[in-house]
Image (cartoon, rainbow, N blue to C red):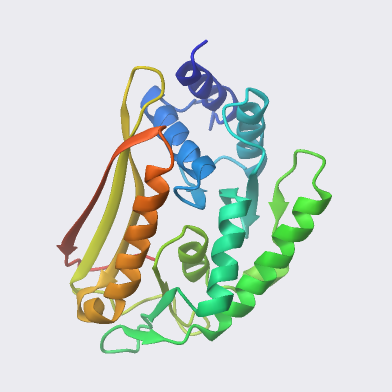
Length: 261
């Protein structure tokens, strides 16, 4: 079987939901995303294709690793019921960088605000330290092919903020979830950045979206440096591999009646 066929077979075998397997296009998109994580082009992938359990995603990842389609540096992370496939080396590097220089811009989008505002993101460093300890301990002890489950402490975390951190965005949103899960982004112009590339498995090319994140247009100047630095580092990593081609980064502005985070 070709590499592409092996990826599709693993997805269709390990990730069925309600007796329905992923389609071939869905399987190829997942393969491209996991390959990007393995290459360090993105630190993690939030699995949200069809709501299967973390254990199923682990079976899929183990199958890919057994076939030597991806490296052993990938692991499955369960964060309060949400499943991520993580490049532990890339995530640890990002967490360490955050603790050194506060490189991630945190935007307060609490519903009570008139407009979004940059905040210090104080609790994010504490979360980063907790995640680092978990990853280091898991990597040292990992022998069985099992997911890493983040404990009860993650129930207090703002997952929107943590996802931005784990997925390698240059900016992430925060809101006080003890008061409300609503936000102030309704009818706020948002600058959406998307990065796409073509996965060159065998002869067929499959275009996938590697990143998609937004920044309120009103904070463009304050966040521009971080976004440009993220773009530069992505370009550098992209040039160091030959599995994905034709990297495209584009920006559009959208205004929506409601934004779900």
